[in-house]
Length: 346
Image (cartoon, rainbow, N blue to C red):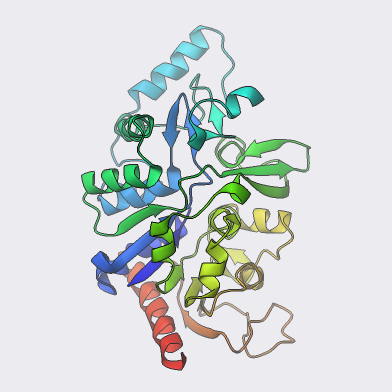
């Protein structure tokens, strides 16, 4: 049994090779829900859905979000109506009272559906409608995602990190507080990050299913440590569970060069070095790391100016770039070797 922590595109890409290394029936995936938004009354779960669509073999693998070949007739008509009516486009964050009204799971992340700032495909929208409808019928988020996973034929056990609301909010140097989706999708990573808040995390709890999954060895793929994995670590009980099990983490950096996304800017904004050394600092519970062959981080040299890893923590090296399933299998095999090394010394 092995459990993956998934957020963004890094870990989902790694999962493309998991079936060549592990029996997928023995794999659980705990997905970040801090990035979720309620858009026009419908709950959108981007990190959950990337795993859902990839496992169902319908993911748009060019963009690594949405459904391949999906149409956008409803989205396009929303844009047309807003323009024809003279309505302001862009993210329309609802007022403070609306943020804590209605369904609890959507707290602090509610946007109007007028001229929706995230492009939602028509088939993709059907998933959000079904998810929101089942929530309104009284099902938990875990139950709803399990139902959708069955509909897409997933082999892995896909779990949200919590059934409680946690919203990733980016505080900027311009004095604004932006939901992560507004910061990244609408603003394209501007203005600069001053801090990141996981609102609601203190009152959230991991589900029993997540607690059980985290009792198994854990792999953290090359995901953003701040906004992809950080919301999970902010939920009380999750980091303690990781400290009690074997954890292997794949760095999303080669030294101080990140493969993709806003990880460097976000890490710098919260006081972490934007590098593999910063990833090591972000994951003090990790027992082993998978690093790129060209990563200058030297685990045997504590004086290394590029950062170092406690030599008590195991290191596997490989080419960690993941562009296709073969790459994913190579990195997954390195993760498996690291887990075997940890088991051998336990």
